[in-house]
Every structure is written in C-alpha cells, then in structure tokens.
Image 1 (spheres, helix red, strand yellow):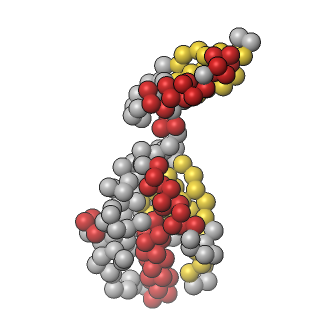
Image 2 (cartoon, helix red, strand yellow):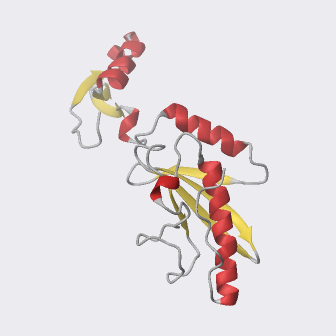
Image 3 (cartoon, helix red, strand yellow):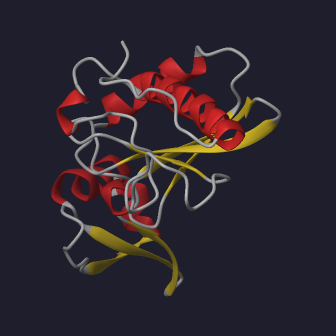
Amino acid sequence: MDSESTLNFETLSMIELRSSPGEVLDRVSKEGMAFVIERNGQPKACLVPVSIFLPNISQDRIKKEIDALKKIEKKPWQQTISEDKEFVARFKEKVGSNVYTIEIILPHGYPNFAPKVRVLEVSNDSPHRWSDGSLCIFGIMTAWNPGKHKMTSVLELAITWLSKYEEWLKLGSWPKQEDSVHD
C-alpha cells in the first residue's frame, strides 16, 4: 500500500478476530486491508498495515542499521518515526566543549537515497549546509554508496563535520573540505 492510498475500514467483531487471528493479520499485511475491531457493538481498536506508520524502507535494512548502531559503545541514541514516516535516529555527541544533537533521517527509498543529517544546535549561518539545513557531508551527490555506507559511516561524517564546525567558530574559516565519503 502506498502512502497516498485511502484506507477503507471494515468492521470485524472480536469473535471473528479470535476465531482466525492469523488469517485476519494476513489480510491486513498482505492485502492492505484495515479493520475496526468491535466488542459488544462498540469500536475498540483498529488493525491497519504497518506501512501506514513506518517508512518505505526494507525492514531487513532497518534491522541491520539498528544492529550496527547497537555495536557502537558509549553512543546512546534514540529512534523515532517522523511525521513524514521517515526513520530518524538522534545522537548526543560532545565535540570540543559543546554537546550536539545529531539527527540522521533515512528517507523513503533508503538506501538508494542518501540520508539527511541535521545538527540541532548549529548556527543558521554556518557553512557547508544545504538550503534545508542538513549538513553537506557527502560532497557530490554520487559519493553516497548504498551498498557500502550505513548510518554508522554517516554518524562518523557528522562528527567530522562538527569538528570542522568547531574550528570555523574559533577561526572564522572552514577547514579543507573532504571530497568523498569515508569508508
């Protein structure tokens, strides 16, 4: 089901759900059906395809990304889904004497589309950012390699960007820019 589709809810009684839960879940997940579950004639809950709430990214890929992030020691992080149904990971990172919040946003179609990276505490006039405020860390757009790079490499690039940002704050000029994504 694509994000532009309208859901047509059918009513399903608790008795029907209890008698064949697997069949009902298959109809929801495979056929994109949606149900209002009623008990004693009163609506109690809804069953909808998970794609209504989650990004259009392979669940296997998201699992691999999360597993790789869990291996990074001493890097507490949070995950959420944005209003646009994009996967968002937030990290706190101390660079210099400042603590920054790094957001890595996996857009629909990730990894074929590069993630966006934002740092919440940077000044609006800082260089090496795109017009939407995301960091310019990949250089030319072809530098993102979906088969090679992951969120962990994006996090490393964001930390490198923050080190350069700290230098820019102190010296007023941006250090030499790297031309490509690190391995």
